[in-house]
Structure formats: structure tokens, C-alpha cells
Length: 381
Image (cartoon, rainbow, N blue to C red; front, side, top):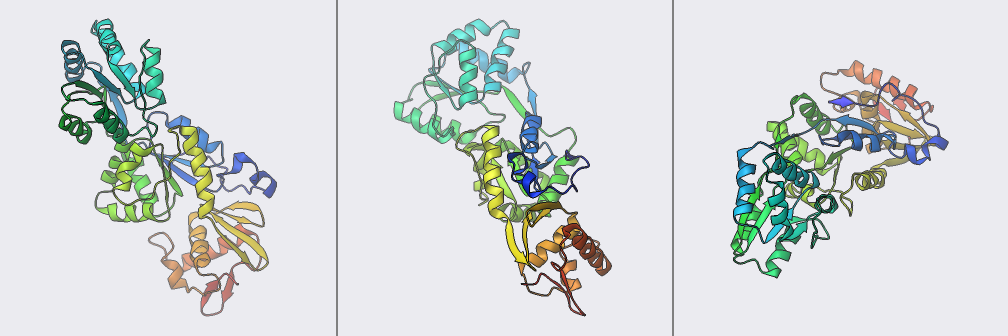
């Protein structure tokens, strides 16, 4: 796991600076599970002020020399497909590059030119056109279900459909096409593999389960599966966090599908773009912020920071945990023992006192955290 925030995370951001678009995600921590284009996504989030945790769930392994891809390519030449579904731009380009190495690029391009080409999204469409080919249709929502419905409505009985896979086999869509009478050639242009170093992903699981990240992003359905697999026996805690306090942001409906099967709410942009994904996070996270009026001060909780009278004040995990517990029931006194449950594991009641002291210092607002003698602490109404 890489925390790209550097050493500036404790810097107070003034109200004027916080109003700028570059600070719209200041105080929030976002997990990034992507491998390819992870730096681009991280850069977009950081440009809005977010602290980013990089934890690639998978890595793409090109299989230009793979026997399965070569066999699928020869099948497309021996039995030219009537319909070709291009799922991804990187997959289309990789397929043609591999064919070039085998001396099959021109025959393959000719076979594709005679087919009805379906581009599942804009990147697939761009790859088709850069190859000098012409796509005939794209689904509005970029989903496989739309593609299957469209092809079945056109009539595919007796036709050959080449399905360029998106990292792994999608048997449900292959079976749906075959049930409609089509012969399907699966084209495995690349495959997913576990990350070289799994430690960042396991650390991200811990952060999500402990609700120490505010949002987690996914750019592929396979990454969702990999994260759940990494959680192992702790998957229930992970799922609970994703269903409640951690915003789940997906680049599109295909990526979101496995999450929805677990009844996890998902935020996704109308168009599958990284910039649109970031805008979705910018729109959604502030809606989850808790805002209070306490002892004459305005207080808003933002991820790992509090906005006090308009100024953003980052806090360490323990003081932030205490503040969240107190803010959940303003006016109610919480004992040291009760607050102890909000702190990281292994803490004692002395740690609660230290966290409260650090919280008061970090907030810089006298009277916000009150001590009730022999009972505990509270945020006064």
C-alpha cells in the first residue's frame, strides 16, 4: 500500500482555501484498487486534495504469445465471425499487435472489416477506428446485458460471434449468446493475475474494515472479486463497511455488478471515464459529512479531518475516532470505557485521555469537547 499524501497531512487549510475546487476532497482518504492507470486516477484525486492509498488488486498480464489467443485468432480466420464484440481498447490493440507478430495482422483485419463490429465503450470504439475499421453499434450504458439484448433482437441463430474477453471468461454472456443460437469464439487477449506484492491489498482490506478510508474506487469487476478474496475470513466486516460508511465508487455498471450482488450501494458516473469517476466522488462524499453546532462553533467531520468554523484541521486516527464517537450522540456523555471501543485495538483508558487531549489541541476550539467529572466526555448541545 502506498500513501501518497506525503508529510503535509496535518496542515490546517483555511476557509478561503477550502472553498477552492483543488480542496474539494481535502480531509478525505480514497483507496485505489486499479493497476493500469492507477497513477492517473491517483493524480486526479490528489488534485482535488484527497489523500490516496494505492493498493492494486490485480495486474494485467499480456498473453501475446499465449496458445489460446493464437488458437482463437486462427478460428476467426478459418470461420470469419459475423459479429465481433470489442470490450476494451487495450484488448483490441493487443490482439492486433499479437497478430502482427504472428504474421496474421492483415488477414485478421480483413476478417474484422467484414464483421458487424460492436464497441462496448468509447475506448473500444477508438481502438477499432485507429485500426482503420468501422464500428456499427455501441450500447448506451456500456453493459454486456445491452449487447446481448441487442444481438438477440437482431437475430444471431447460426451466426458466429467473436467475444473479446475483458481479462477473464464471462460464461454467463457466452452462454446467453449460445442459447440464442450463436457459435461463440472467446478471444482471451489478456488475463488478470494477483499483484506481485499482495501486502498493500491486505492493508487496504484492514483500512476499509476499520473505516479508515472514506471511499474506495474500482475500475474492473475482477478487482472487486480480488478484494473480497483478499479479505478471506474477514469478508463480513469488509462487506459491512462497504454497505455503510465507506463510499464505493465504480467506473461503470459492469464493474459495479459483483458489488450489487452483495447488496453494496454503488456510486458510478453516467460515462465510464476516470475524470467522471472523480467528479462522482466529489459530489457524493460531502453528502455523508456530519455537521454540528457545538459550543458556538460550526463543526463538520470530513474523513480524517474536522472543519472547524470553516477551517479544515486534519486529525490523527485516534482523536478522529473519539470525535466520531462523540458526534454520533451529541450531548450524551461517553465514558472512557465506551470511547475505548472506538480506538484502534490494543489501546487502554490512558490512550483515551491522550486521544482527547490531542483532539482538543487539533480542533483549536475551546469548549467543543467537555469533560464531565467522573463520567467521561461529551460534545455539548
